[in-house]
Length: 315
Image (cartoon, rainbow, N blue to C red; front, side, top):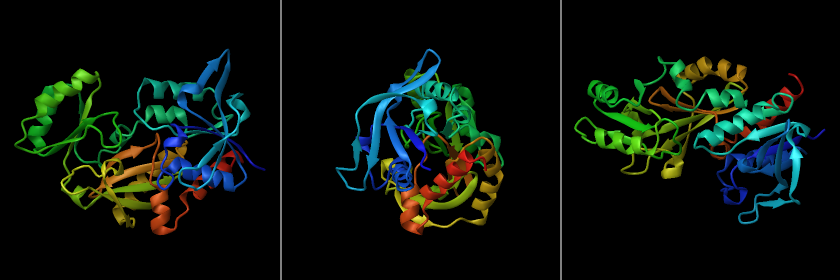
């Protein structure tokens, strides 16, 4: 029997159907006979004890420029759905956090993927702190002297916003770089959040590996290679995806973190590994499943829906 699926995501008309993971998940759900309902985060509301959204019945097709069709706009109660996908992209700001609080009120009666309580409490760059032996030397601080001390110890570092995404605001500071003070002033003028600094890993020139885990199990990986003259490997800023397998070290990392992800209801997760070091655990809106399917013929979307259907059936 088909499930009723609601998808909370950014505007669907903007997605790249050849790369967007949410589109691929919707496509696979539709293939299985599940019904789709689409809404944007601003349409989520708490109304006198009910969690409602205003959105549209959705159908999708893999036709560029004509990849979706919407039914008539309607207001619905999310408790009437079997599954809600929390799939809007960061920034992980107070709007995002508020969404997780509201969706907490229907989960698990309506299964929210990924579990919004742990999405809120395990932001991408913070969950890795529970595994210091797997990560490069890392400091999270707002205090300039703490950041200076870290740079003095490690020389070549990466500095970035704690809640950034897509490679935005990522800087490499080499040993002779004198811009730390200026960057600190710049970020301090934007918000009052800490920064994250990590020791620079030269292996990034050979790629930043994105490993996909489904319900705590590694299913495959892609390698994201930085563009010429670029430190960042994110595909948003020109990183090139390439096929790559899972190393023994990758399997070790996944075996360590996988049970925690499964226990906390994180069904679709993408982790980043550079030179054998875990740098991020992405829970909010991970990507990469279409590239993995093209490279290795692994239907990650099908595995994700298998896991969701099993959870709905109490397995």
